[in-house]
Image (cartoon, rainbow, N blue to C red; front, side, top):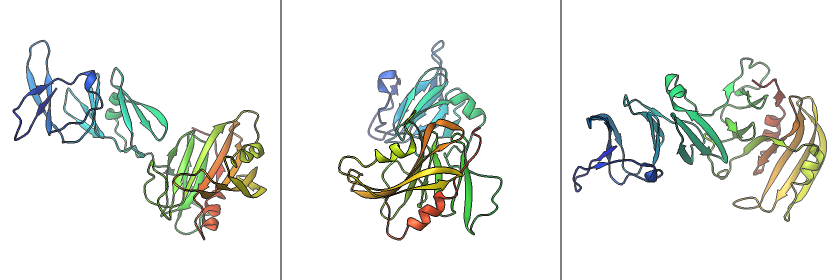
Length: 283
């Protein structure tokens, strides 16, 4: 339950039901625990600021804004995952589904709050940082079975389809790259018998065109490369660099690396990043 706090509204109780999921609090409110057997109430000491979205209650846990609160204790934990969830849906038994960046993820609130993690989604550094240019770091994607190096000024996060997203700016938003920013997206797409060469040929569609095409070596594997003019890229047409190859650990998938938009003078930088790709056993 919530007790609204406002100078121009009387204090009144609002029972939060399923029909209110996803609504926004219009005034500051304070969270209250109610024992339905005795009718006893106690303040949990947690205030929900004006404008925050109430997502719902699952078991002993309440999700609002970018936080999850344990109702029995009033303990709260910030959701720091990046990109941030666009929608949070409450299930049962303390579980929530996050929808972000086109993918869904399941969170067990009890397990998560027992051992809180920063959970930014940022890729962790590998133990071995040898052989890199000065000012570079190598990061690992355990789910996708790969490592890759990037300049320290870049950022790198988990991506959809067992992949990763690297950006020349700080955080990776859910929006298209900002002006002057390069984005390198790696996906492990399920393509079955379709080979890397056929996969790249399909990128030039709806008025797009292949500007450069060749076969190269990448991560110890033969790879197909194509520079593509994308007429349908959002928010405006753009040129991209693309590589397609297979991982020895996921032979049924195609590893697609898509770097865009290609800014003047940044091709060498992007190719240097991609050239550091290495496949490792997924964890």
